Image 1 (spheres, rainbow, N blue to C red):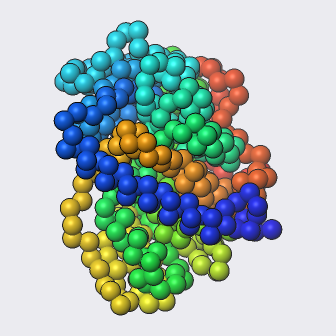
Image 2: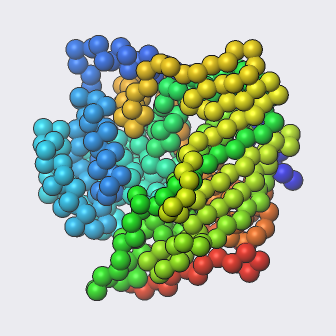
Length: 429
């Protein structure tokens, strides 16, 4: 049975209904945010950060820029040196960063300790492999959540995120994900027009993240590091931590296609490999993927991602309809009403935090964890197919796959590096 018809997987109508509800809530959030900006004072909110690396510290800066009435009061990271660097970076914002030695935590339980602090929002910016567990801890503690993408790295992790997302709904908590294009006005305007029929019925689409890997320098192993520490410090290059770059990075573009189509893929067939990044410092992940996703009605989506030096770059999405074409985030060509966005586009990395805080204060409940989990699973399916050489269905990935990449009883010790996947040899589980 195909995933689009499985009872546990949303139908197109149900998915669109949820998408429409989320979009309506987002529109309400923008209105609330406008009113909040004019108010003399807004309810203060306290933030706790999990993951004090480059993205975590950057997200805190975005959060502080988004709202004058939020302060950072707790921090957690696996490594003490990362914590020290982050605190040094935040020294310039001492008026808004109120962490103390007693509210800074290190170790594998740092995420749970931050969630247990007196905070309103937990920010999850740690390597994605840890995200399902930290999301669960935050929601169980009754905290609103900002969670970076992706939501997980394997089917087991996605199922955990979906379960926690449902718990967040029950508790009336807000969750905003780091899929910032959903908070970006050009994307919102163009995709609304696509969904209103501006290009007719969608017949195909494509999405790309083709670029370099300078943003992800390999972290070389140092004397005294265990296998686990070496892999976590070099987390981009190990699938149990990053999901591979199709999940960690290309998820942005796959999420846009999910948003446009309003449904999950039925199945996918992918391929890939590694040609440039062959040294041991690059772990075992691929440096290129090509995946064909099939959606209900026979709609095919081409997904291409690559991290190689000296190659042409392309980072965007393209939609083909019966009456025209569209580039989400930019323009619509053909059809009755061609359109190019020319309005004000605020920084989406700041806007996503502003929308979260406005929703919390207003009582408008937004929960992007469901959409993030679905997009994450699609990206995971693409990796699974490319690694194994087999077609992967949505139903199999969501309901049958036993793949769980998170090591059990994790501690600083031995952990052999996973072998590089070999299509036709690596099993589909």
